[in-house]
Image (cartoon, helix red, strand yellow):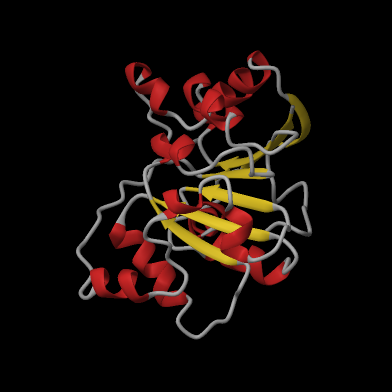
Amino acid sequence: MTMVIEVRLKHVKGADEKIKTSKYIILSPKEYKGTMNKLFQNNNPIYIEIGMGKGKFIINNALKYPNINFIGIEKYDSVIVRAVENLEDKEIPNLKLFRMDASNIEEIFDKEIDRIYLNFSDPWPKERHSKRRLTSDIFLKKYDNIFKNSKEIIMKTDNRHLFEYSLKSFTDYGYKIEDISLNLYEDEYPDNIATEYEEKFHSKGYPIYMVEVKK
């Protein structure tokens, strides 16, 4: 059984100012294309989450793994500002947030990303919209240009149709499945860090699908 949540984006009072003044938000990420290591002032691996939502996953990862640099990508001001609010009392030097559309990802990164997280991405259920899915071959080609060396994607979703589509898309594109779960919580992954959506879906009894692929 799958579940689709309609997200209604509401205007958040003071969102523009919070975004502009946050030390975590990079307003002009294009300036760092090909030199993201300068943004973090180190040469540690860089992991990105495309569609970070309110930031629970990326923030907790950055706290847990200080020797890895994390970048959260989110399209909507009304969502990313919630992550900014959650970061107000924290000092996390290995975390940055980019407000941008994933379709422009090649304009921001150039052969410098080590891992991509795709968590509960929009399933775009209508077939005519399939190319908008973040696991379509259109996006996989974009990712080719931003990975540093080997290519690694970890995906989680509650949507079985998107999961099945993504497995075929990954393997057709030459990715090898390294790990897979048809019910993440039954399989008991002790190091799993949940997203906000994941906690909601799991609490309602929906299975969480996960796959890790490499190329």
